Amino acid sequence: MGEFTDKVAAAGNKIAGNVKEAVGKATDNDKLVAEGEAQQLKGTGQDVKGTVKGALGDNI
Image (cartoon, rainbow, N blue to C red; front, side):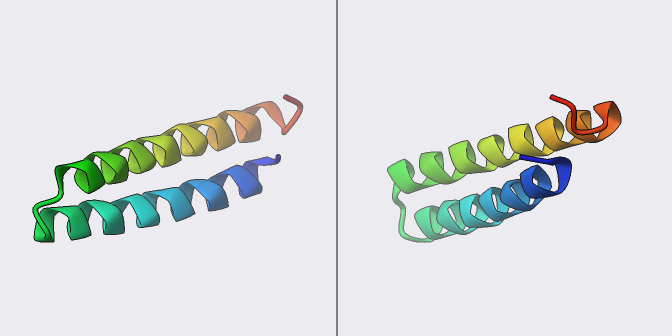
């Protein structure tokens, strides 16, 4: 995957994770809150990966 693809996937995971976390908090569902936080963290990792790929010219 290239930089752009990684960043798009990252944005999707951050948004989905944020929604899961909010629904979990609203319904007092600790498992859903944790899943949302984990998904947001995954998105952050993908964002960093995309940034590194961009800096290296997508050659990794």
